[in-house]
Image (cartoon, rainbow, N blue to C red; front, side):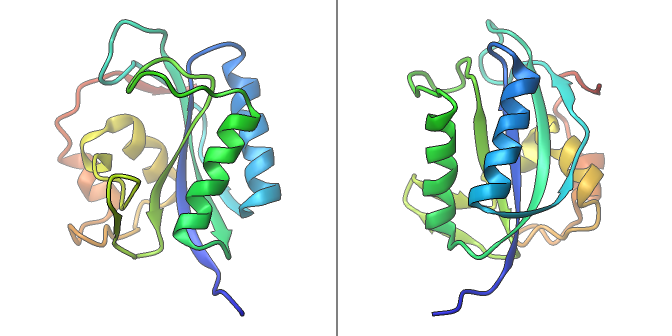
Length: 164
């Protein structure tokens, strides 16, 4: 069986330990297990979202060409998180590494609460849109019909996000 290559966009984040090292190791594992990393944004220092009582995050976005199905991609990024030591215990809590699937081509996917693509909150989060706009400014959101740059310009999120 031949699966087509799909361009997926991932957002990586870390706010515990050696944040840069965890991001680098995640990018390396993604290139080994998910597919070819086509583009990588700069690293962004971001204020925590959802739970302000925690250290700031480093975030970056990746464009990856993959043959994995959306569910296989989800399983793979969850495995990578575990390999790097992530333990899930608190929503919006501190974490060694977080890998979110933001977009998978122009597909709209809803598999209960397990997998929602496009990421359901991406349009509301500056820490997602800033790095994503750097590597995919003209990508058209499959639900809103607007480019990432257009969504970013109308964003009301005021959390601080700065390129390092």
